[in-house]
Image 1 (tube, one colour):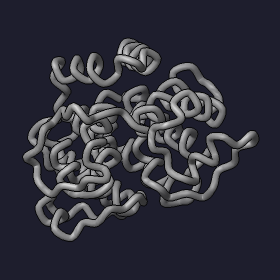
Image 2 (cartoon, helix red, strand yellow):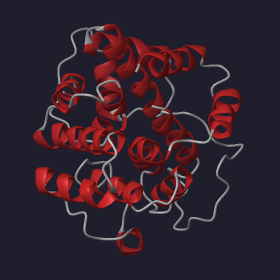
Image 3 (cartoon, helix red, strand yellow):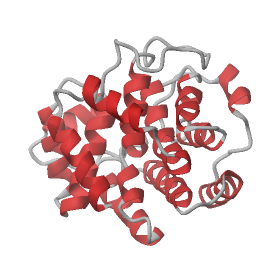
Length: 257
């Protein structure tokens, strides 16, 4: 969960100001959390407390109404009787990391929780698949699998092309908000990384939907490398100072997960 939130904060600066280099200020004064962090917190709340998925997701998002939600999701979050809308957007994958962290002893439970929190909005097969692949990769990393094994498993299970390197992806990559064009690339950014920070720099450097790419890559990289305590402190004190509910939920999740 920390991985998703820090990735979101770092990438937020470059979502509409795309860059294609890993050489940038990591924690910019212009950084902020977006819908990726809010939705991740909502998923953690749902799974920690066994809450109704749609209602809880709406509650969290209505609490933070101005954090760059997609058009269809924004309509859904204010609807009195919300129904899934057959989406395959990358929002399916950016919010699901708690399913892996809270079920690290049971892959089937992790994937079932992924389905539970995804189907309320992103019920298109590609949306469901993108969320599952993200959870599966994170779960494998949490359980000590090396990058080559994770790459092979995810490629076989979800039929994603994970054969290209970050340097091969970057030149032809274009802004995209679908699972099909974000999840494989984000997983590659994590698997190719030498550290958590390196994974986030990989994701941002693609020049795409940077906050979401980094929010997907971040939890996988967190599971692989861990996150320096000082980096968490900066995120908490500088960017989440007015989001005590998110911080409290993070602390609860890591205390009980």
